[in-house]
Image (cartoon, rainbow, N blue to C red; front, side, top):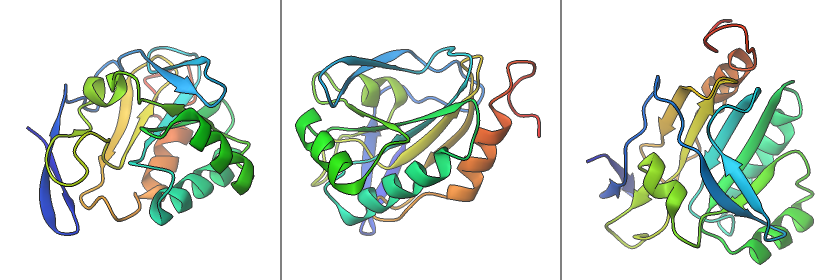
Length: 178
């Protein structure tokens, strides 16, 4: 079972662990307008799936703002931020912060995303929400980058995730070409 840390204390993650090389499971999350958003699988473009515990924390908000700016620079890629926040809170956050270059998706209904990608926190004070993670899925639906942040309160490695996303946009190769 995978683990991460929250303020130095180990927490356990549950669900099916997804790794680089795996086909990304297709999971439905809820958009801010209550419509369905599909994450994973083959979309013909790269997917940067940013997983955060809640947009209502300083680190998650900063991370989402950063990916919103950087995502606009990558052609043939989409960014989807997944959290357990209610769609109404996500909409308020996006409106307040001017988030326009990415999609937010709530996993609040069945926690299907968190369970399918192995990022559901099952112990500690944040049990029931997702940890901080980034998955990059190439145009063919294969996971080409995975980062489970070792400390939930710290931001991910933006440079590595964005570099992986730039390499994952092509449909003519495995998605790891540079």
